Amino acid sequence: MTKSILLVGVGGQGTILASKLLTIGLLQEGYQVKMSEIHGMSQRGGSVSSQIRYGDKVYSPVIEVGSADLMVSFEKMEALRWLEYLKADGKVVVNDHEMMPMPVIMGVADYADDILDEIKKTCKDVTVVNATEKATELGNGKVMNIILLGALVKAMGLDDIDWKKIISENVKPAFIDANIEAFEVGKALI
Image (cartoon, rainbow, N blue to C red; front, side, top):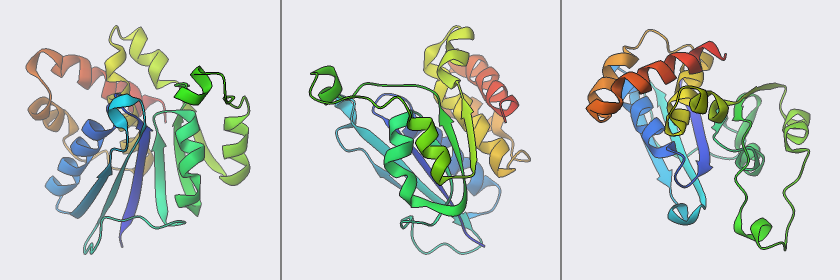
């Protein structure tokens, strides 16, 4: 059976690294994995998404509307923007974090106050985490993506994979311990 995971965020949040680590782990576990990335205007704070499909036999990395088993959103508005891709019984893990897009910064649009309520109206299985705050508490705001990876791993029941080894082999040596700690914090949030 093929599972579909959608990671969404804003440029600079580490969405691509988290999806790379997830893909490596799934491959090492023996799954067939297909991954697709959309960067958009990511270097300017635009939308970023990674689509990962894994299972015994996977033919395409593309997640169609209404077919994602799990969506992990690094930013609240991105969760709402991509919600239509989730299955009716899909799960959402959303970082309770706001990154103001340019129209909001320029004063020509508003950032809605009720985003989490809107998500919960559509999806019954929503876990809200404050990965950004947890990363700051750990002393490194940049590990927010690895906190969310830990939450994703726990939500999907992928705990048996040697994630510490994967993280150790794929992040800079100076940041290995911080990323492993962040991963464990993320798992504990679910």
